[in-house]
Length: 76
Image (cartoon, rainbow, N blue to C red; front, top):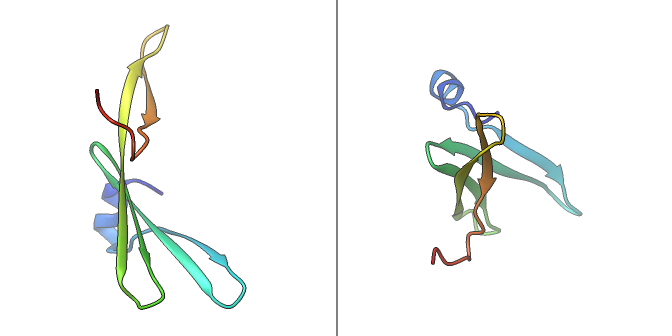
């Protein structure tokens, strides 16, 4: 779902879809090199976005583990 090549080929942003009490809502998900961009329309059809950075830590036997960084956390 987060493969940028797939989005480039199809031109479609993958979206999680769910039905709320009176309408169907969607949350677009766009992979970026250093995080994930979430896109959603509000009740007035205005786009809202939230970018969540990803950081990596080494694993014990090689490789890397990805972590979502809290959007409100300081980077101190």
